[in-house]
Image (cartoon, rainbow, N blue to C red; front, side, top):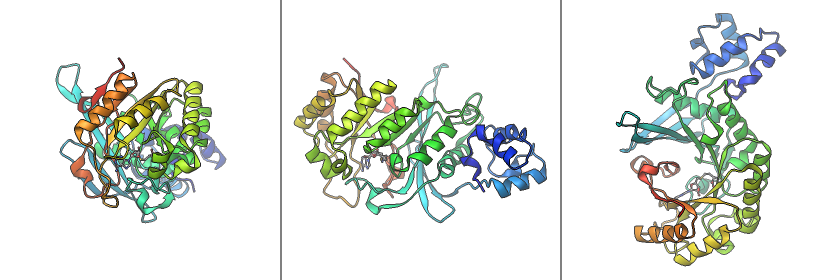
Length: 373
Ligand code: SAH
C-alpha cells in the first residue's frame, strides 16, 4: 500500500506497470489528483469502477479531517487538521490583497504555511510547538495532504491558477516542526507540489525555514532545485543565540553562516534570516550593529524582523515597542541590508493556541519595507 499523495506524478506509470495494471491510466490518475483535485477515488469518474476499487486498496487517498477553522479579521485562516493516527497539526492560509490590473483591490497572493512535524524537538525558547517536544515527523502524503485540504476548502473559479488549477501562489514550510529534521519526507512532498504535471507550484514560490541544522544546507544545495531558504537566526552572537535555541550549541553561528554562504555561492539563492525580536534581550542597537558585522560573512542576504508573538510558557519574554523595532530596522537599512519588519497576521485566529506564527512572508502591503539604499 502506497498513499496516493506520496506518489510523484512521474512515478504513476511505472508503479501501475509493476502491478500489472494499465500504465496509460497513470495520466488519468494524475489528471484526477492534480487538475480535478479529487478527495476520494470515487470522484475520479473517468476511471472504471473496478479500477477505482484497486486504487483504493493499493493507493489509499486519505484526506485529513478538518477539526477546526479559525478565521481572523484580515482573512487569515488557521486550520486544525486531524491525522489518521489521532494526532493533529496546524496549517494556515494567508491571503494578500493588492491592486489588480483592473485597478481594483483584489486577491494577489494566497500563501499557505504548512507543518512538517507533529510538535518539534528543537526546543526554541519562545516557540509554542517546541514546548511540547516532538511527537513524530509527518509523511510526504500528510504534507501534500495539507495543501490538498487548502485546495479543497479555498479554491474558487476566480482564484484557480491557469494550467494547474491550484489556488495557492506561495507555500512556506514554517508551521510546526523542523523541516531539516524531516528532510526526506519534506523534500519528497515539495517535489510533488513542484512537479509540472502535478500542482506545478514554482520552486521560487516555495520556502523552507530551518533553525540551522547545518548538514541540511549542503543536501538542499545538491538537489539543484530553486527552493527559497529562510534561516531562523534570532541573535547576533552565540551567547544570546544559545539561550534562545539549543541547536546553536551543536552548530554555532560561524558554522551556520559558513553553511549559508556556501549555499548561496552554490545555488545563487539569497538566504533570508528570520530575527524574532524579544524585548530587552536581542533588540538593542548594539545587537543590530553586531548582526550587521556578522552578516558581512555572506555574499548577500535578506533579513526579516519579527516582533515576538508572546507565548504562555515564557511570560518573561515580551514584544519590543514599535520605536525599538524601527530603530533596529534603521541600523540594518543604513548598512544596506534588505530588511522587512513583519506585521503579525491573523492575530485574532492565532490567539487561542499560539502554535503557528501567522505571518505573510511577502506581504509588502502590510509591512514596513527597508529597501536597499
Ligand atoms: N523550525 C523552523 C520552522 C518553524 S518556526 C525554523 O525554526 O525556522 C517558523 C518561524 O517562527 C521561526 O523563525 C521561529 O523561530 C519563529 N517563531 C516561533 N515562535 C515565535 C514567536 N512566539 N514569536 C515570533 N516568532 C516565532
